[in-house]
Image 1 (cartoon, rainbow, N blue to C red):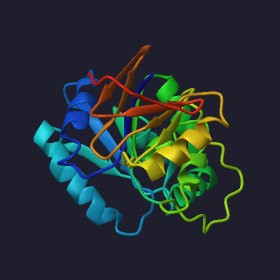
Image 2: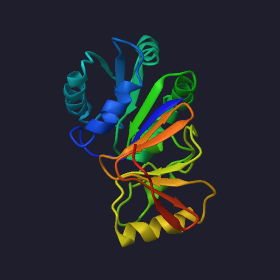
Image 3: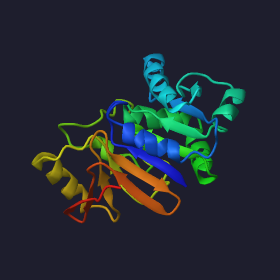
Image 4: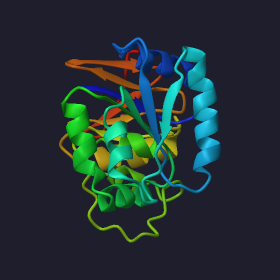
Length: 222
């Protein structure tokens, strides 16, 4: 599998990650699909996204909000893309939208069959086993206004993901506490930082951390 996890931030902060994402592509004329977390303001988000990726000589892009009706023809084109990029936003709303549209199994199949799947913040969390990390810490979490109770997600990797990490005692205490409750690594990535998974190789861009069984480990960047 080829997956890219973005901790957050704008396109200028994510230049290194975007470079790494594009390097995974084998096509000379790739198609990139942007799936926003919500259709509200999606056109504005897509225009920023498209303007930035044009700097990488990518001209074929699709904007695909999943919370408005779409045709089977459009979906087929999306699933033929070289890269699918899941945007940031409210994780619970995004998960509910993707499940109701029947897209979780389709996106998982896309990734398992060789498509490059990437996600920013909420989009990155959705690629992991569940979205529990969106619900804490209490002072900086996504509101679950959708009352989503089934927090299971794509389960493409055997780790959990915490975006927008800030290297402070408050965050550290919360993540150490949570890491003691789970039996897999919890990767915490600040804005502009992230994870590249290329087949069996995992690498890190920027200053990322791993929390495991109450311990905090600084990860070596690529």
